[in-house]
Length: 281
Ligand SMILES: Nc1nc2c(ncn2[C@@H]2O[C@H](COP(=O)(O)OP(=O)(O)O)[C@@H](O)[C@H]2O)c(=O)[nH]1
Ligand SMILES: [Mg+2]
Image (cartoon, rainbow, N blue to C red; front, side):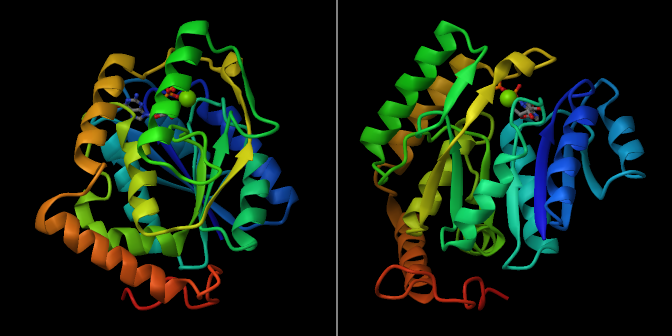
């Protein structure tokens, strides 16, 4: 099963065409799927449309009465999939603004089937790029990603900030077992939680791959909801907190993460199948 998780804040224009595209990609590949729309206190028609779309597509909804921001929205979506999914399922989190082409889900699945636990759709990987992003945001984003690469080096990973990623559900289940409510801890800081997640998965020694992806910002029908200044500040908080996880909690995380890596990976670094995800119930 493929779970597609969509954080949605005032996405009435993008949601219906995006669901149609997701269905056309996954149904024609004959992959069973469910979409989880996490409506984050939208003041437009997102809630009504999401309910209506349930009649045509396999959709579950989670609703925040008030806007809580992307961190809490993603957290609730991941917890939902961890609770309702099986360890061998895949969860893909993508933006709900129709700038992420769902056909990349197939390439993500291929990587996960080949033994990776997380796959990042990356503008900076071969074949990647972006259309319609202005010079200021391109530069800011490139700078932030290079900074993250220096501070939190990960082999072959160049895009730490991408919101378009796929994961084995067992990885998310294990991450929640280790970090609990602190899996995404930096909540009110714009998109910081997206980077935090990959840092925490890195601590678990998860095998992470990138695939080239073209961000189609020119397709975005609504304004951006990202506050770049808050997110930039968030990255510095992230560095201070996680360059070396501190204290008793940091030590406990590192031990649990290392124990998990030993359980899930064989000595040659490949996943032990099908044991991944077992043992956390
Ligand atoms: N920024 C922001 N995005 C939210 C919030 N709640 C949900 N989202 C969703 O998070 C995703 C990322 O936001 P988006 O506007 O696409 O950012 P951008 O593409 O980087 O400019 C979209 O799917 C939003 O609908 C929120 O409170 N703030
Ligand atoms: Mg977006």
